[in-house]
Structure formats: C-alpha cells, structure tokens
Image 1 (cartoon, rainbow, N blue to C red):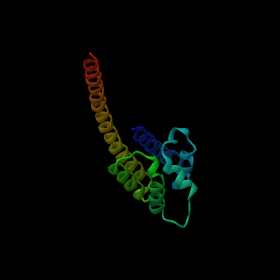
Image 2: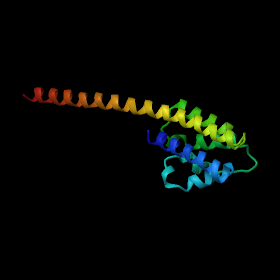
Image 3: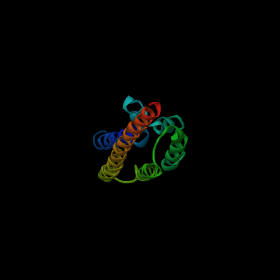
Length: 142
C-alpha cells in the first residue's frame, strides 16, 4: 500500500516535471531516484544503476521492474499498469505526456483505494479473530 501511495506521488511529480522542466526520461528517473520519498520504489534505482542509452526505454524499465520485483509488494495488475505507463512515456508531445500521467494517476489512485478498503476489512477480521482466540483461551484456562 505504501508503494502504491509512492507511485501516485511519483506520477504526480512526473506530470509536474514534464510540464514545467521538460526533462527527458533519464533525467526524470534520476531526479526522482534521489528523492527520499521514493525509497520504496526500488525500480527507480535499478533503472539508474543499469542505464544503457542503447537500450529502448520500455525494455530497460521492464528489466528494472523485474530486478526490483522481489523487494516490491505490487499486485500483478499494478505491475502491468506500471509497465504500460512506461511503454508510452516519452512517445508523445508534452500535452500527451501530461494526459498520460493523469490517466495513470487515476488508475493507481483507484488501486490504492481498493487496497485501503481491503486493509480495513482485514483489520476488522484480525481484530475479531484475536478477541475470539483470547476468549477461547480464557475459557480453556477455566
């Protein structure tokens, strides 16, 4: 869930950086990888560490995502959305990039909302199970 929040923030920052600073893809990743708010997004660091200007960006991003996957708790659907975002990043004009960022911000906000809802449900379940287990233990001791 923290990674989803960081991805939403990252995409918002990408949107701003594209609109006002006109950074290229490598500069976007380098700038955000240095930001402590994105420490949980290991794929940023993997991309920077393995940067190869000869490699097409979508392929390089996919490799970075695979390399960082063991350290990331993303559902397959979220990972796929991230790959789809990367596949179109840098392929259109500035307005298109901003619209693309906005689209994926909305998609990830929806995923985040669902994750928060599931977390709340599981918290209630675990709380109830804890009370029942405690009552059961108390009855067994009597």
